[in-house]
Image (cartoon, rainbow, N blue to C red; front, side, top):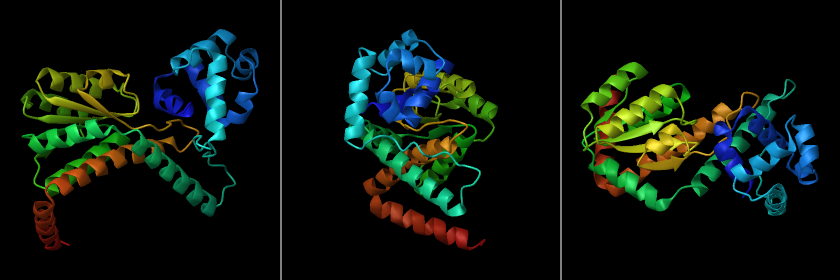
Length: 278
């Protein structure tokens, strides 16, 4: 599973480490044939940096990382890497690449779910007085969608797109509340500060992040991992969005299944209300 930790830790890598990661993700077969010195030359780094990178993703040495890479390729489980949108791509190619990316991201996210943690989070949300949601940028869209879903099943949920006001809202949080912090990098300053403030107030903090070993991840009581690559030259923003959305929808469906009859009644009631203004 060598490429999975690279994907998961990508946002926490240094610039040099991202150069190494980019080469391996884009050229896994070629990386397999290179020495540490050759890979260092191709990535404008150093042999020592290659060894440190190998250790950072969980291997004792560069040769052991190559063994892991070989096993991964032999099992045909490597991450879909041809996701770069080219200038001459047809709309059909764009559609195919997007579909492949979404399927891959959702599958990878599903495979990384700890069912015990999932059950704990669902239970805590179900018992909470109020669910506070944190997120900015693309993560804010998922957080707001989660708020709307929770309201439909009669759960008090609080989210404001203004991150500073959201930070101030943590003053009212208590130990009876749950906070869902959406941050792909886990290092966004305002989300980190808000999460730390909520934790200090005694709330149960859930980090939905691509980097559990981040300020937000380390602050949280539990993490739900959203492994996806976030890079400017790829459709990574789509990847991180769908990874977070998968977690959001999964939590919602688990809550619905827990109280199915009531959820069905409340959903019908919400639909009837909305039909009056549409």
